[in-house]
Amino acid sequence: MENLECKGSVFRIRNCAFDLLSLGEDLIDVDDDDSWWEFIGRDLRLKSTFLYCDIYHVISYYRDEQKRNLTDLANRLFHYMEELDNALKSRSIPLAQICFSDAALVLKEVVASLIPGF
Image (cartoon, rainbow, N blue to C red):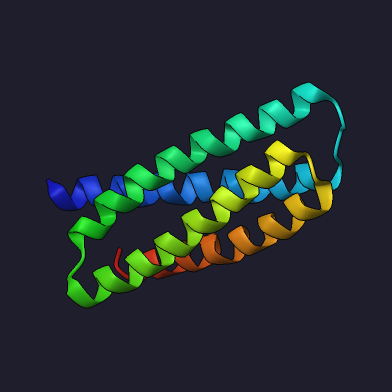
């Protein structure tokens, strides 16, 4: 049963990653409306919360060496996600785009590291 639960977490991580990566398109066509910034920020925080919970669950399933590698990747990811959130709060489009590209690279690494195990 636990393997099935872990696979469900991986599935949610992949879906959440897809949603977050599509956020990059929104950062290209920026609307300087206050509601736009709020919507993007809330969406980012919500997806980050789901990612955090599911990645934590998957990390607990892995063995020691894999656990360390995935933990390091997750720490980098959430560092960049926090920087992106701060950039969105400051409403700096260039900074948000840079932070997004950093977070997107690490997010792709996280997803790629999960696929071989399942």
